[in-house]
Image (cartoon, rainbow, N blue to C red; front, side, top):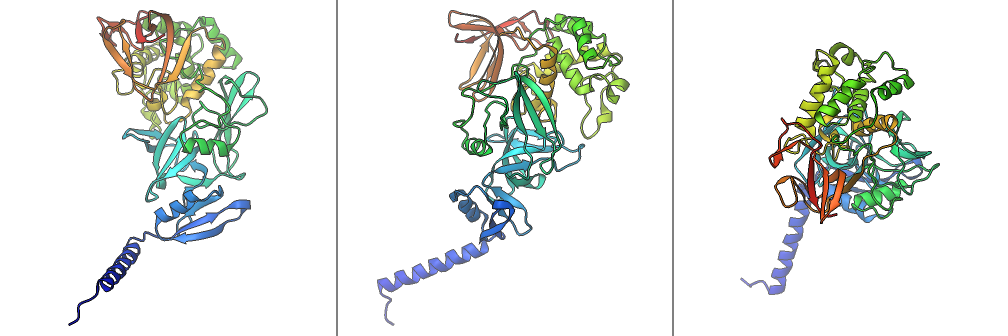
Length: 460
């Protein structure tokens, strides 16, 4: 029997490999994926694939912004650019997510903020990456709906009115339902009569295309503002003070026509909390206004609960009852702020400012992605002239906080997190700042009394 020549052997092997590759492709087909153009209000199929990753590669390679990938059922799985609709469930049900690059979980209620910025889809189309309220997070595709960006969808946006930054929050991607809040002083570089887009509240864009391009590449090259904006009313630590009087709180409620509020004539109680526990009375009052409908909600009236304690979206009737308004304010100051949200040793701690879904109290306190902005909006109206020297920035490295220069490390702001501090003094290469928690014998002591406690970070 004649032996096969080397060239024939190679030919047979190549043929076998081709058959193997063909069969491998056939056996790994996972469905039908259409690359669809939606320009000019119409849809047109550009190509069809049976592997999602091939469709994704084609989408990524195209310069056409008006492209998406659809499955056999017409579901949009991936976009060139667009919005993620989070308003897909009843108000009693939250949507969970995983923060990008971590195992950390979070939650959002889409009834309070419908739209997020689309950033990507995972390898099999089961997870969607998007940004909302400062957090880059992965959602189950089954929990959200993707919309290509067009004049037919309704996104959230920012505008400038006078010296104020307004945020118009979309409550529905498919119609014009929205709410608008003046949340703080305008950022540098932003002008009136212009619509700005942002999903972190720090970097603002005058076109959706520029925003989408930059956020997908995790850069800010085309932002209108040259430095990140941190709304001082949203990033003021609770370990700060207000100069308002008890009557100022009443005047605010009178101007809101809320004189029958549970909060009326309670200014002294809020200020007592500040004087006793070192927690900003104006911030606590603003939070109470936000959570209790200015002291007029059914829950507040029936339970003396001004802060929504234990009033979960799934069961608001589980709200904690208090014997009096004073008891409620004290519990909030001590049990929730001092021992929890302003305690770097507590699992709830992300910074004691109102914040957003990436940092601050909003991360773990509320399902509303813009809860921090809404509390800040009331604080801004209540006390329009802040006197505290606030400094806020994103950490590019770990920043230890010491009880004294070169002393004990009390807590650390980690790389990539936000640090927002009241600066007291800078000298000899150290910055003295207000502590987030009471300090005793060189350590955090949340059972102790906050006596204008100071701590130190390196650098001027």
